[in-house]
Image 1: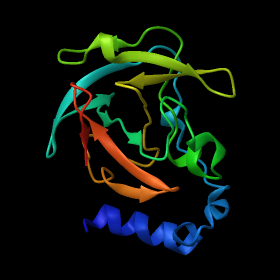
Image 2 (image 1 turned 30 degrees about the vertical axis):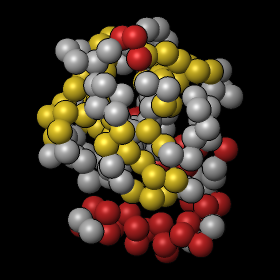
Image 3 (image 1 turned 60 degrees about the vertical axis):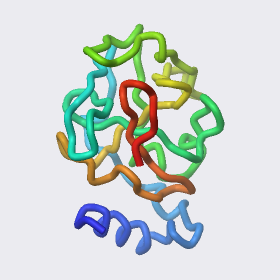
Image 4 (image 1 turned 45 degrees about the horizontal axis):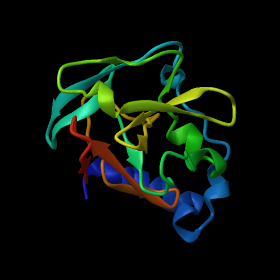
Length: 156
């Protein structure tokens, strides 16, 4: 297990998430950088796991707990603070290798539009660092968090 995964696993275990106590993280506050204030640009970024979808240098994620294009993270205490939805006010801008045909949006309970790619709601990791894939494959909040390739293929 990489150090970042070890730290996250320890934090989640301490908070009781591993034992079904997801509500213990309800107080988690995301850093200010996670807010979306417009239309994101989605690009492919070269990483240790291949070229993955990214925005502003941060890897984007899909959540295996989601049901189709429905965001289930918003209903799990602490989840949306740690894994905020990638939202948009318009049609996201796409970089080379990102297929516009795989992009769509879904409406969140707060009225914002979440970006969908290849049928997966897309998220950021609030505590991640630029160009890091340390959180790809994390098991948290009842599912796994994986990256996506430009083809829409899941990267574990």
